[in-house]
Image (tube, rainbow, N blue to C red; front, side, top):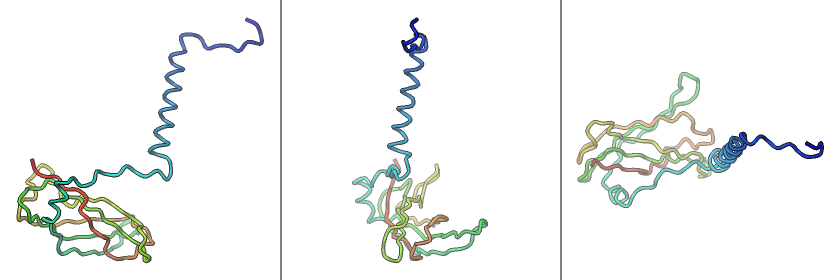
Length: 159
């Protein structure tokens, strides 16, 4: 073999080289679209039309907020209350979007939290009320210390 020609990889290593290049390209694509800093996390599914129509049948009552020190020295904010199913269908799951703002009204945190899950037991039946508790331990310090906006984010019906 002449000295000026570049050496070629052995033929049996070519498929391995192709797989390695494809794996690197796939990893770069995943990082670019999902994991890179500043990339928006995937948004959960919005309310279905059926769930949107049913929202008027859900009542939140006795909603209170309290804060206490956790064992790590940080602040744990708890929002408690009751949810009542005023409709005619049994529910398997209800989630809320809790939207926290700063003193100037700018959004500082939006977190989607389940307030009811059947977990294999009985669902939330028509006319039934259940207590809920939502703990938050990572609210930004710029938060205005007011009760967040609570918006129904998901409803799953019993089949």
